Image (cartoon, rainbow, N blue to C red; front, side):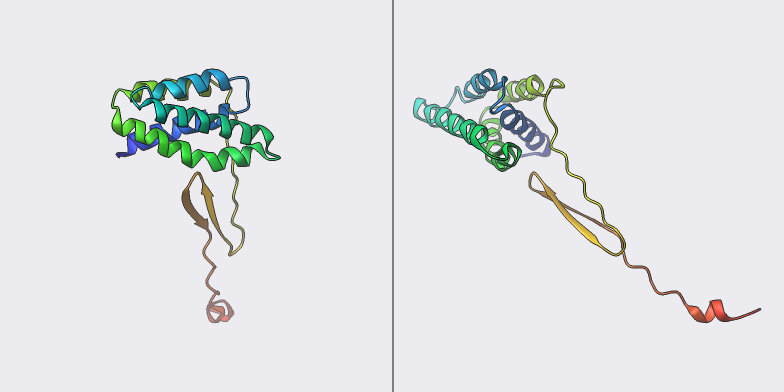
Length: 148
C-alpha cells in the first residue's frame, strides 16, 4: 500500500477510536460498518461485534486514551484492507476522518525532551523517532592555557 493510503487509513482509524465512548460513536459506528459493505454478511457481523466490544473496552477502561492508542493499530489495519480492496473507499474513509476531526477531536499529544547528554526514543502510533543531543567533546585545555 502506498503512503497516501496508509495516512488515510491512519486518519480513519484515529477517527474511529476517538469517537468510541463519545456522543459521536453511533454515527461513526454506522459509517464504519458502511465501509465494509462489500464484505460478506458474516464478516460485517464480526466487524460490528468488534466495534461494539472495542467501544465497551474504551468506555469501561480506567485510561480510555490508552485503550484508544492500543486499538488504533487494529483499526488502521482494518481500514487499510478496505482501501486495498475497494479503491472507492477512499472518499468514504476521508469523510469519516473529517466528520470526527471537525475540530472536536482531542489530539493525542506526546512531549519528549532530551536534556544534557540524554537521548529520547519516542513512539506514537507505531513509528519510532529518535531525538537527542550528542555529548559535547571535552575542550582542549592546552589552547586555553596558552598565552600569546
